[in-house]
Image (cartoon, rainbow, N blue to C red; front, side, top):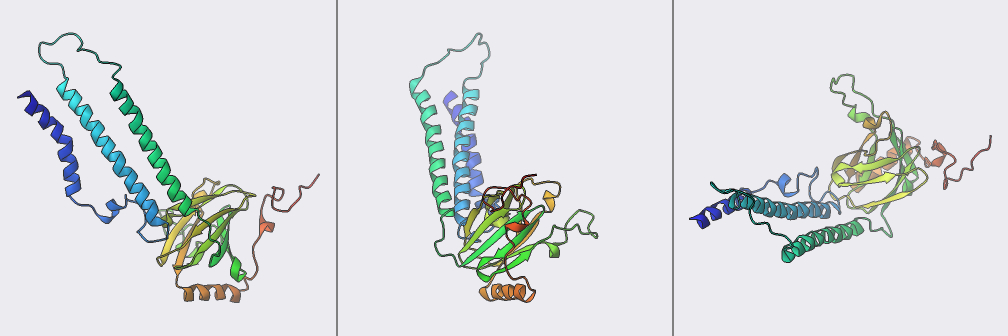
Length: 289
């Protein structure tokens, strides 16, 4: 009788887990509610896989832990008429080894798969199809299309006077154009303070440090318009430091580059516009007063 009761209590967490699994999953659930779609870039699928697999492993650990906890509460609860403390157990070497080895395996596993995917994402393109230099500045963006020797100078996002919710005028946000299916090398720079370049759907962001160049390598694989923002608190109008990324066909990309040339945006916006002119590596000696 007691054995049957224990089995019923032990079956509760198992039944709950099976109900969730058998109920089926939407695409959002399958990718862990990440704000993107598979195949957006060459790196997105590996990030989704690492994220979802990690949560599955942790969920399994959680279900086992919750199940054992509930089982111990039910099986070893105080019965009517019992007094005093139950027999105390300690120094159970097999259990203590188990509690040590399993977390170690989990940590090493997470580290190994993270290092593998990070090495893949950070892999350098030896001969990229497109090189773009991005400058973060309070509170906007400058884009240098290095191969074509043209530039785009962005301005801070402007509040929409017709919107009571504080949204910005979408058409006035800086726009970065990328050709679909091409290897893109993005050089990340800062003109003043620390910023962070984050394209949300790319599942990737990287800091932009004054006086240092960071590199990002990505191949966009799906056309569309994707939101970007500064992901590092950089001052009063940080929330307005937004931009869009348009991934377009090669013909559309070439037409956009030509439009910059026609507008007279030839050349590059370099470090001469940086606010910090005496940082190491920018070629500007410190001035003595």
